Length: 275
Image (tube, rainbow, N blue to C red; front, side, top):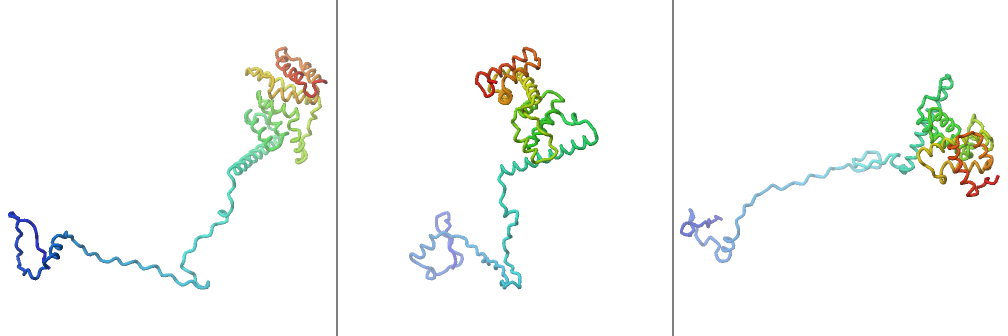
């Protein structure tokens, strides 16, 4: 059917079509009105999209032929294992590092002593302290004491003196006994009731008392030095400890620094203060 153009002319009349068509051939009535009032839209014909065929798979046999169906990969044995907790994994790594450093230290000490070379200055004072703490973590108090003594041979160390004082006051007695049972070649323990052990402990008390006074720490109790001195009083008695301190011929100012610890023991009536 020919489309009639309805564009307006200068006088508002429609132009006549080039080829005349009888009005009988055109729909009349309401159908003609609907066709003329409907918007004219362009229709584009597109080719239909053919769907891509699905991949053909071979039938799955009883096991003689391999199937083309992909199967998910089975997890490996590592994935199946339960992962370790983070805190436990950190402890294991710290223990591994301690054992590695301890083995290196003891092998080097053995080589130096076998060749007759000096040992003291092979490490710095801070390194000797760290090695002493390492030996204590691994429950080797005899080797820890050796490291602390080497640290003191270089220069003063409050940490080393404090650890030695704890050893002479019986803090690590159970650890030392356990070390002797488990390992061979461990030196015998110095009895806590011996005079040599008491004098070495009092030597540490004097050095630490001067150190704390240097940094204006005049607190008598609680004080790590006073706590260990009270343990010495529990073992030897107050009179013996005080007389041993007097026999050291200390200067009056130094003796007054230690005297306050004895006054605390008498005031609180600790065990051993009556004898």
